[in-house]
Length: 147
Image (cartoon, rainbow, N blue to C red; front, top):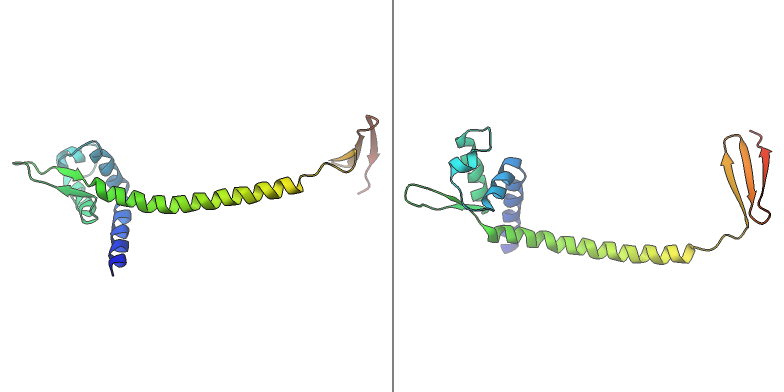
């Protein structure tokens, strides 16, 4: 059942970060603690709306509030962000390993199929014409192509 709680925590954290206002709040808090009034300044929404965004981040465990006399600063919970980063990195590393393996397969396939041309003559198509370049004589022969 511990894995289920972890999944629920991840769901709440990612859902909280899905909102651009909450991401901006997290970005601001990464520079230091701030009050609701300070966090509300850059937004054209009410302080009550900012408080609700902070509450969502708090439930997700991404921020916490403390009491400092009359102030109630909001703090970023860096350890929770670190847990999210670790979860993302685990899958990013697996994806990178798969891409490296795919690159190796493609490199082997490309080098195995890359053979020199068997004919010294190269044919190019021009609309309604076929032009043959003979690389041995350096001459060009034009022939009208029948539709």
